[in-house]
Image (cartoon, rainbow, N blue to C red; front, side):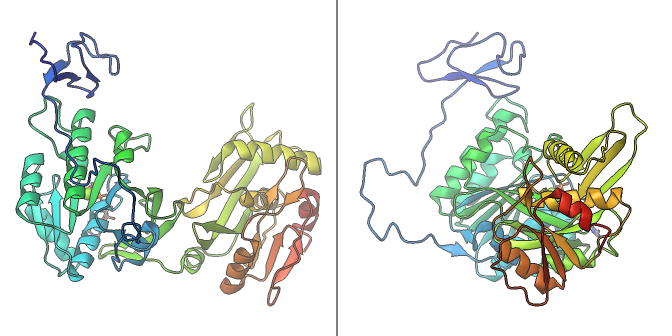
Length: 447
Ligand SMILES: Nc1ncnc2c1ncn2[C@@H]1O[C@H](COP(=O)(O)OP(=O)(O)OP(=O)(O)O)[C@@H](O)[C@H]1O
Ligand SMILES: [Mg+2]
């Protein structure tokens, strides 16, 4: 076994676990004889201020932002990309991460930013044909490599305004004994690139693959290292994609960008309510509309439910886009209020369009959908529902009620079931104030 020097350390070649002493068995991945001695990595950050200073007004000035011109991208970034920031873009295979980065690279090149696109996954020929298919005329630099050093030397030779690395898992440092794509490699590659990019004031977008469980593959530390974490999501069978902010040091989280995907690339959907409405036909039994607010923007979503006689000894409750524990509570509350038990019925709830709604304001729409399916009656395209339902079945006020009503008015909805408030603008719209589940039950199917 090699002798340890004062400053070197040992790391597991499988998972990257670090230790000052050599270990026979890795405490993290449980692998045997996986530890190798490593030379210490110099952690120099060009942006360091190593003595205490008092910030002056100049230094407190707003960060400089580059507006990408892709509206939905600028929205999720909080008004454009901050110069020198690091962005991690995660998403399922084939969802459109590379396509999105191509569009960003092209738009920024048109705005005079020098862009370097590093691909560790596709050949130059593949990249060229993709660029042609997407109809992008802007000329920016490509580098197809898997070696970290190639990227670092390209960055040392030329100063770029934007560096895109596709993907972090495909780049490795051959000086480390760990396999490419292993946690240790991902951590090293991401640390080195983030530091270099920050030192050179280069904005940095790194693509990260997502594991089966939905987390970005590699250590969680990746998310801590960068300034912004974005997830690109959506159902591959549907034409739209959601770009969601998970973390943002330069803007609000919970902001969602909506894109439409086609062979010719991605286009921003600037009027999502209209878009989601045009995607659906008539509102059938068990469906209701809900004005959802994500970030700063309202979107009208459709909530669907089926209730049917069960074939199981225990009836099933499943939910997509709505918290299943909340569904259990809601079902109990509805059962208690109306005295029609669902004990022999399966209940399935789905928020269409792949949206995951965490706000309690959707409760009334979920209850309305369940009751609509149960009563075998339709609620119609011109009616929306919002409000939180408490444990005693009472309807509670939620935030941004005015904004929701305005969006319903704008989209042509004529009736809203919601908690009483009394301060709304009621032109062109009927506000049906509901106090509890019992009242909702009476109104559904009876006009
Ligand atoms: N020739 C084509 N015509 C139409 N659409 C295409 C074509 N090629 C790719 N696409 C669309 O682009 C999507 C793939 O996009 P992209 O390669 O950007 O995804 P990705 O997230 O980078 O995938 P990966 O994880 O494999 O890198 C496909 O799912 C498909 O919808
Ligand atoms: Mg890709």
